[in-house]
Length: 150
Image 1 (cartoon, one colour):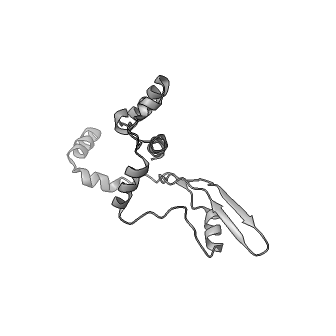
Image 2 (cartoon, one colour):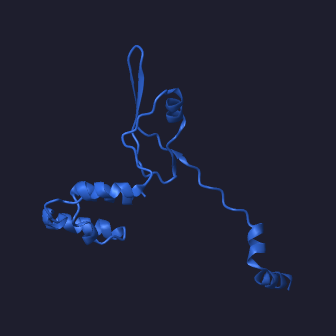
Image 3 (cartoon, rainbow, N blue to C red):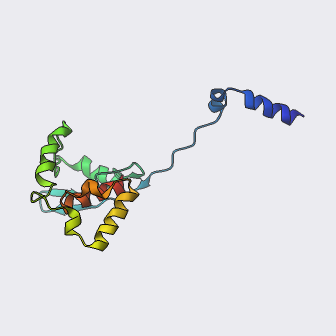
């Protein structure tokens, strides 16, 4: 009888009261990503070349002890690209470089099997193949990599 009464009271209790008593699950531990980090030295200079994948999802700790130490020892940081604060500034660049200027469709450049594979890869990401058909192959590849990484 006590168990039945307890079950009935729990069913009637407001959800926030129950939620407050339940501890939140601990976040999953982040694994060390061990990104590519090269060191080039001569008598008076040390250069760290750091390879990154720009779509980090938070599951891995890329800014780990080795990378942090290299950043701390450095007096200058040089990046491969500077992203504009206003992302709309990138649109003209995409129109200029990512769209085939001759008007050829990617589907015309690929074989039957390649088109099927591309359509399947895009479908798994919820993107219709026609959405990227006017773009250059490098841009479609970059998009697929972004979809897979993010």
